[in-house]
Length: 305
Image (cartoon, rainbow, N blue to C red; front, side, top):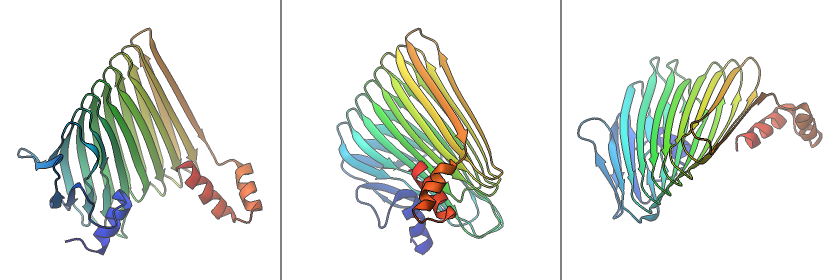
C-alpha cells in the first residue's frame, strides 16, 4: 500500500526507512492505511470525527508511537487526534506530514492534536513538515497543538519545517501545572514566496512550573515569517523564550516575543534577534576551501541543527 513516493515522505517526516516497531498509525490521503498497537499503547478510531485516540498506560517506559500523515494528491484533509499519556509514563511520539503535490490544486492538511500529560509523565513529541512535487498547486499545512501538563509532568516538543511547504500556520497552546516543565525547539526554513506563521502561547499556571522556548529560522528569497511567542506567568514560575532568525535576500521576518506576569514571583525572560550571516563566518570557511555557496549552506545547517 506504500509506493516509493510514500516511503520517501515517511523517511523525511518520521525518519522511517521501514514500518516501525511499536505502536503506529499511518494516514494517507485522508484515510488510515496501517496501524499497530501494543500491550501498553492503544490506538482507537474516533467515532464522532476523523482522527484517533492514543492511550498510553500509566507506567509505560521507553516506548514510541508513530503517527505520520502523507498526502500524494490534491485534497483537503482534516484530522483530530487526542493523546492520553498516563501517570509516570515515558514515551516518544513522532508525528509530521509529508506532501507530494504534482497537481494544479492545493494539497492541504490541518491537524488538531490535543495532549494530556498526566502526573509525573514525560513525553517527547516530534513534528516534522516536508513538501515536494512539481505541480502548481499549493502545499499547505496548518497544525494546532494543545497540551496540558499535570503536576511534575514534562513535555519536550521538537517542531521542524525545512523544505517545500508554501503556506503554514502553527498554533500551539500549553498549560502547565505544579512543577510541570516544557521544552520547545522550533526550526524553520522558508524560501521563494513561502509564508509561515507560528503562534505559541504558554501558560504557567502553578508554583514551580517552568518553560523554555527556542525558535530558530532562516528566511530566504521573498518568503515571509511571523513569530508570536507569548509567555504568561500566574504563579511562582520560570520562563524563557528566545527567537533567532537569519534573513536573506528580499525576505521578511517579524518576531513578536511577549511576556506577561500575573504574580510577583514569576520570572520571565524574552530575547529576539534578526540578522544576516556574518561576513567573517563566510570568509573563514572560504579560506578553508569552501565556495561561498558551500560556506553559506554550512552556516545555515549549523544554525538550524
